[in-house]
Image (cartoon, rainbow, N blue to C red):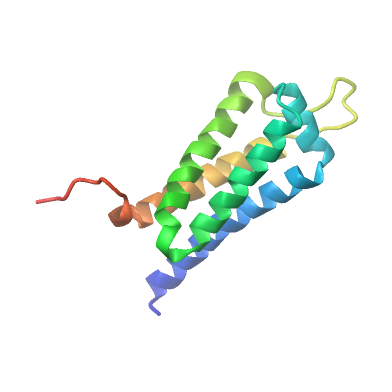
Length: 135
């Protein structure tokens, strides 16, 4: 395995693991995730559905045959998360009393996932379906 292949695998694995780490708290009903989806007005079904989509993204990214589909799904999922933060939630998630706060960690994680998604998209650009052939 070449050095480039190892780096590609590490970056793919990093993206996949980030999605797994984001999905698990949603299924467990972690307080910050419940707060987020309550503020969005879609608790609990939105939280569970998002967790399912994140789990599917993890599986698609990790499996070599479906990696590009997972990366493309990641682009959609993380764009939605960032738009939700910018338009509705804000950069720091906290309840009205301030007793529960993420300190901006969820938004920063979304930005890291977005960066990893773009890097992986670039590394797997030859696999993009419906992409025109260069002449």
